[in-house]
Length: 471
Image (cartoon, rainbow, N blue to C red; front, side, top):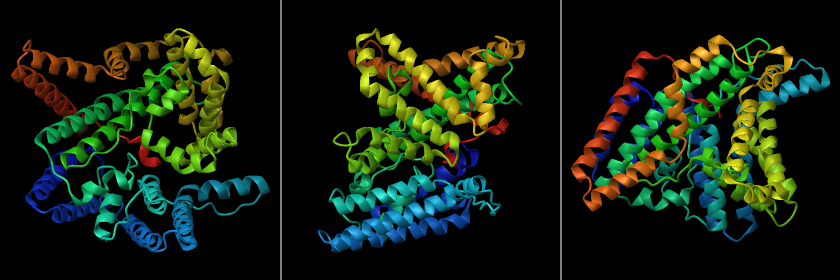
């Protein structure tokens, strides 16, 4: 089940909210939330609920073991066992096929390539489980002694299948004691609907264009088609994932949980370094705190540490050479920026940094998109006019013109426009220039329009992918 689904929006969610707020005690609310979360996860893949339950039980007892032996070598053993088991499960499902295929190619063997169906959200809840165990060992999180509470942390349907990656100490207090303010419930609905619009109205629409432009035999039809396809995909993956994160954060607010922001308008960045402080923030901070710093961080072997982190970042996104290449590409950019480019960009006019980042990000998403290396090469060549492709073609021009307003809106909304308009509205309401009633009516009308358009689109459109499910 996904958030951008008619059944979720108009059946599952209303029923959940009724049951959740009918429960008076926090413990009862937690049971309701856990039960609905497991049902949500089991909707598409009931068998993998067993794997989720195993992970929760395994690290619940691991946390108790580490807490009992705090300060002793046995505690270190608990961390090692937890990381080993969790990463082994993740690697078995996600990377065993790639490893066996690589061995076959390298040694000329014909071993059977395992074909596991990747459990949805396994990368996200595995990392959450690891952060809990490590933080308990470090003393950054209090051990959870009530198993249902730990299961709730790992299985909350808000962020179970696509993040953000929430650390236990972020929500530990709220699991045991929380309340929902009317203003926060209202803000949660706003984030939910706004995220739904980003996903359904924008991501799905530009995603269809990206698929049309980047579906070819040897190369795109023109230079324009290549660049248009890459740019549309860059917009799709941002609106797809940030929209889902907005919905997760909104649903959390509606139930009294405060999840960290996962995106902060990354395309307004003026360097790759800044971009990765704004894009998928929870994943970036995970690798920083649990891989980069333990390896030595900036203190020793900095360049090697960066290479390892970005190799892992690429590999986390998928079992393919293109994902590893994509990770190493951004790792190389960050090294170059640390060495000299950041200083040069700071001295130059700011728009130069923005242009550089947009080209760098688009090129990176081109690598990310193509699992077929020959097609990646064909697209790269077409982007720079190689192979005799024309500068433009009539079909691409026609499609871009017919979707011009959508593309303009998608580009503008990458910037913090909505936040600025909201801030101006609140300021006007406080100063009396615009009545509070008028501000509220405009906001409600806007959100109602987004919800109606999104719902109609979901009913009439069969194209509703979610890119990060495969990660």
